[in-house]
Structures are given as structure tokens and as C-alpha cells.
Amino acid sequence: MDRAKTPRPEGSIGSDFLQLDVREAPPGGLADWLAGQLRAAIADGRLPVGGRLPASRVLAAELRVSRGVVTEAYQRLIDDGHAAGRGRAGTVVVAAPVLPPDPAPARPPAKVITPMPGAEVFDAVRATPARIDLTPGVPDLTAFPRAAWLRAERAVLDELEPAHFGYGDPRGAPAMRRAVSHWLARSRGIRADPGEIIVVAGVAQALTLVGEVLRQHGVSEVAVEDPSSLGARQHLHHCGLATPPVPVDEDGLRVDALKSPAVLLTPAHQFPMGVVLGGERRRALMRWVADGGIVVEDDYDAEHRYDRAPVPAVRSMVPEVCYTGSVSKLLAPALRVGWLLAPPRFFGDLVAAKRFADLGNPVLAQLVLARLMETGELERQLRVVRARHRRRRDAMIRAVASELPSAVVHGAAAGLHLTITFDVDLDDVSLAAAALAEGVKVQPLSWHRQLPGPPGLVLGYAARTATEIAEGVALLGRLVKTPQRTVKRV
Image (cartoon, rainbow, N blue to C red; front, side, top):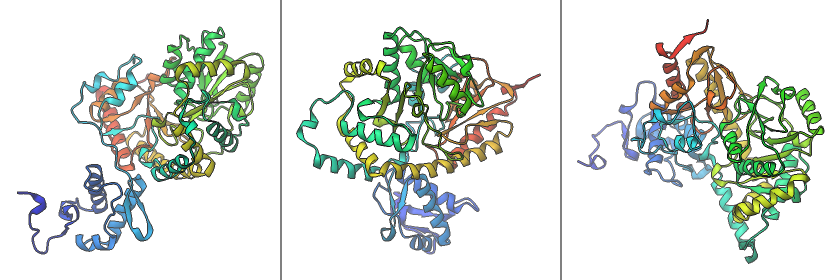
């Protein structure tokens, strides 16, 4: 019989709304249960985006629970980015959770995470289903400002001249370059003329363009921090460049260990360890540049700070730096919009490389983003997600302290991820593979190392709820405690 049409017994404790029955809730967990039921209904479409939830007083009366239970469940949906309070309009569904693919994987998960990952590894990891994705580098995609984007897009289309739909400047739309110039001056202390800016398809394309041009100028290797992003190294390798490692300590890159003609840095929030390039190191780097060294600055996670003062970009102090950033971690990676600044000796060649790569980025997205930047919507969005990301970071720190008490946490003051290291001999690749087999995605720290170092994991928290974070870290804790998993150092 169709459950939706089954008559409810007289006096039952439930509601016609979603056929909710509080007798299914675990003892002492009414708010958790109700939030989970509502989240599942949003995910499968029973509660569509734009739909309004019942008034808390009405639903509480139907379920015969306190109104506080309902308001707490609604607040959890709001904190997760799935709903929003709209005053007299009530609580409205604004975004659906990102569901994992079909739980039957196309390949055995344990084979995806291997000790020697190839160029396709990140595509394979993204395509592998998981219940809880704690991989780093992904913001809260449910927080994308859809309403603000639509308003800006309508305004842009109303004002757009027919000529804007033709081929444009490979450097990017003038309005976008002007908006980026203002944004960098406000938020990163960088003074740059719009004519110095090249709009690119994210930092990934910027690294590829820079790599190609450095090769043209006779550079055969670009030093990288160790540990550093495996993905960034892969882009440089694709350009035929070697990536010799330079150690990182609590003050950032060891500038005194630089032997290469160029170096790639993440000085505001070093990936993956989260340290900041210290003042003395910055001064040493300035001297190194004055002697002819080439710095490529990836301003990674600079805007996502929680427990520290803003850190200026190296480019704000050294104009000769090749500087790149994007909105991938602030809005969404799918936008594929970023920017690149370069000293005059490389600028013309970089514009040429961009021209032959794609004739420029899509203009409409640039103009919409420029409007969000110039109207202050992007700053408002940053304030919203920064508060949400901080709560999720705190949830992960609590979970690690509870489930992995021997792990050392790195990089908590900023960013969208934590790195944890272990004081035991542990194969972090096999640990990450075992976690994936259990439905939790993480990255082994050894992927990002070229030099020997302690094992660890890189854990993203921005895209997951506090409940999911706690569940994922608890699984890691159980796996680490498996007797054959670790061997104490002697």
C-alpha cells in the first residue's frame, strides 16, 4: 500500500508534512532527527528549492514536540546553507545538498589512492563516490550567492552592448580588470593598473601560462615548497619544468635554501601546512628577487582567515612578482575565473600565450563578477562564508581532538582545510585508501611531499556540515586505531 495514502491512526504523534513521525527519532535526538529528515527531503526533491517550511509553531504542534526542537532543526539547515529565514515569508529552502553519485563505484576505491599518483588522479578521486568528502580546496558550494548572481546578471544583460558578444581583449573584459584592480587594492594591498591584469581560467591556467613563458625565457626549473600542492607541481611538469623541493618550517619557505632561478610560493597560507611566510623570510625573498630571482605567488586562501590579522601579499611589496589568485575558493571552482599579474619582462609573452590558448575567458561571467566586486556583494559573501567556514573548522578541531588525540593540527588560523600529522610510523596512503573504501575522502600528506617527513592527512572542512565532519573524523580515528595500521617509532 502507498505509505503516503495510509490513514494515520487517531492520536498518532506525527505530521502530514513529509509523513514525519517522531516515534522514529532516537531518544534525546529529536532536533538531529528532524534536521536529517528535512535535509533528506531537500536532497531528493520533496522539498524543492524555493519551497517554504511550515511555521515552527505549527510543525511543533503537529509533532507534539517543543517549538525549540523545530527551531533548532531549522537553524541547522540555515547554518548548513540549505535554508534561509525570510522574515514574514518564513523559512525557505535555498539550496539542495550535493549528493554523492550512485554508491556502486565504477572502480574499486582502494585503487584510486596510490603511492605514486598520476596526472589523472584528481579526476579519478572526484569521480569516486563517497558519503563524506573531506578533500581540501572546495568551498561550501551550497553558499553560492544565486540570488545576487541573478540580479547582477540581469543588470549586466540590460546594459550590455551587442559588441560585447564578439571577440574581446585576450587580457579580459576591461570592466573585470578594473574591478580586480580595485579588489586587490582593497583586500590585498596590491596597487596594479587594470592594464597590467590578465583574466585567466583560475590559478591552474595561470601556472600553465607562466610555466610556458618561463620556458621561453630559458628557465628549466621552478622550485616549490615542500610539502606543496601536488596539483600545482603537475601543471609545472606539464610545461616541461622540474620542481626541486625547498623545505618549509614554521616561518615558511627556507629562502636560504633556494638554488633555482624561480620559485612558486603560497605565502599567505602555505599549502598544505598553513604557515605564513614570516617577516624576515619576506625580506630575504626581496633580496633574492633583487638578485634576479623569479617569484610566482599563488595567493592561496588569503581571504579565508579566522584567528590572525590580514597578511599582505608579497606582490604588494615586490612589483616584480608574478601574482595569481581566483574566486574558486570564495565562490565556486566551476566559474573558472582568476587573474594574473606579471612584471613587464613577461607580460607581453603571457598575453600572447593567453591569446593562443583560448582568445580570452567568457565575457558574461567576467562582467557579472565585476559587478559583484564593485557593488560590495563579494565582500558580503566573504563575510557570510567566513563565519560558516570558521564554525566548521571549529567542529573539525573538536573532532580531531576527540577521535585523533595524538595527531598534531597544522594551519588552523586560516584557509579551508586542516593538515594533521602523526608521531607514529603510518602509511598515510593506505589510510586514505581505507577511508575511501569506507566512504570518506581525504588526501594523504605524502602526496604533497617530495622530501621525507611525518605521515599525515589533509582534511577539507568547508563543504561539509559539522555532523558530517564529526562522522568522517570518527571513521579516521577508528582506522588509525586498527592494530596493524601503525607501528610506534623507536
